[in-house]
Length: 385
Image 1 (spheres, helix red, strand yellow):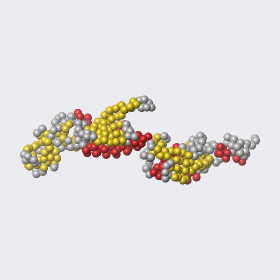
Image 2 (image 1 turned 180 degrees about the horizontal axis):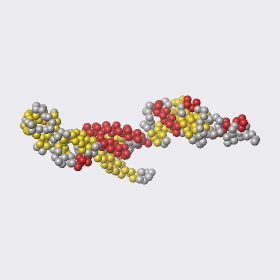
Image 3 (image 1 turned 30 degrees about the vertical axis):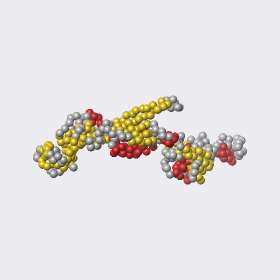
Image 4 (image 1 turned 180 degrees about the vertical axis):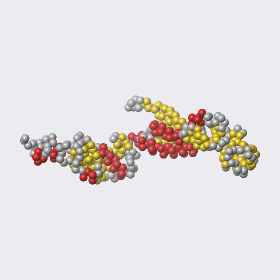
């Protein structure tokens, strides 16, 4: 058989072979480079919130330290723009030290490392020069691995992301309204709800970048939160209801037409309405039992029966079925003046009038002052003063 020669450099197969696709080992590697990334890459960083694109989607940064953020953005841009010979099927990014030790790789595999050589990040666009190094094997007849190096320059430019454009333009998609049934929210409730919303909105924005609060308006009857996302408004409404109980409803207002799709655009008002009842309220049920509300949350009411002084729980369905509601009452302070096996005599601390009550199941001490509740002419011991 006649000896074959590399068609590119003319070296014989005995000296430069075995030939691959008619090329010696050296020429095959030269004619089939594996690292095809461009020399320059441009990427963007939102000057307002620090977000940047990952696979076409804007994401929040891992750090807000500017220097670290610039390298985070540039590293991401470099990785996303890595381009390889089509014969490379498996890619692994490794530290430079590990890459140096690699001598063998499976066919179709490439290991790559990169590190910044020099940078200018004092002003924008920030410029970072990377050395990118790769080792790869793309043919089973290769005796030596591809080993290539390249300098790649990444430019990080400032811009304003779509979310910040909308935020800075006053955009909002929904209004979250916090109200209470048949009453206005107390200042304490408003403060608690505002704090809860501020705490949770940061968590929501990790999953929904448009979940920002554009504005908060305090009204006499409650609070309005202008939200960048309807989904975020709904999530916050659920969080408030889970904490305080109540109900959620929605209303929609036509605000225009989408220029691109010609579809009608609506703004959503998500209203969470807290229960009429509050902690400390005196309530009654349809059977005539009298209670004090000890706690309220999304699961229901925690009550103290003022006849038995035992704690009871009602979920919201049970509370509605039992018709638990506020009742007219009067709170008084009275001293226990004397007692018999069946009765305790009290003296009203304002009018000094005396009256008798059936002795309760718990101990009542003479000379102690107690808080009492008067409902329809009947007294109930609420607490010791």
